[in-house]
Image 1 (cartoon, protein in one colour):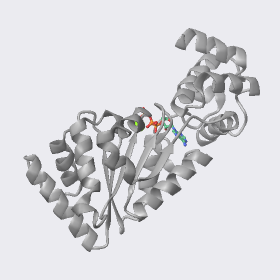
Image 2 (cartoon, protein in one colour; image 1 turned 180 degrees about the vertical axis):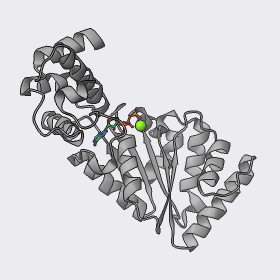
Image 3 (tube, rainbow, N blue to C red; image 1 turned 135 degrees about the vertical axis):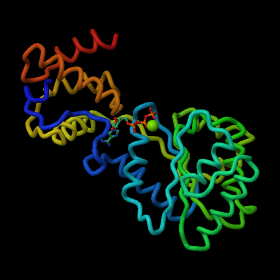
Length: 265
Ligand SMILES: Nc1ncnc2c1ncn2[C@@H]1O[C@H](COP(=O)(O)OP(=O)(O)OP(=O)(O)O)[C@@H](O)[C@H]1O
Ligand SMILES: [Mg+2]
């Protein structure tokens, strides 16, 4: 609708943005480097961040960049994860037969991990939405990182979730996990210059090289969204629609304030 009005070649602020076109801000690049280090060293990481900060996007990007000859990437994101489902899901992603009962499935995962280790491959298990893990699941995670009584570390494990994940790992019963975390990183919202660059990146990806939002408009967007990418996307998209309806070639702060008032308050 508004795409041709503003001269876009495709819809901007889309979730499906190609990983090669992502805005590679400093935090984003840093998380990537740290996670790659954790993977290489076969250790353990916890990444937290508020809703919509770009946690899953970082994972998507890393997956694309990994050398598949070395790493086997297993990505799990399920809200109602039980140990049985967890182990069977790993088996499924390894193209192995899934076994129904938990002890058997666990044994099979163990075997598979060990054989990958012997073949110089590194299994990377990523659990997204990890703040939703049950106590029973965290217990299994503890088991996984305690692989073979600590004498070796055949796999890399990455927990990603909202900030409360960090609080949960501070509990005494989970001390064993907390102590083994090699990388702890909090991915927060962008700062003001980052918010501007983020918006410009999305506009450019959609085929627009000229500025569309005034400086004051970006100030408003930053204030309202706290630099959280998903919030920026939602707000900018609504601003573009509003601008198109009111035939505004430039998005200014008055328009942004109106959209916030009408759509979000
Ligand atoms: N670096 C980036 N460049 C471009 N777009 C991004 C970037 N980071 C995040 N986004 C966009 O922001 C939105 C939210 O990102 P994402 O889903 O990764 O957040 P999240 O932290 O995993 O959120 P949740 O807590 O809800 O799982 C997505 O639409 C994504 O495409
Ligand atoms: Mg996510």
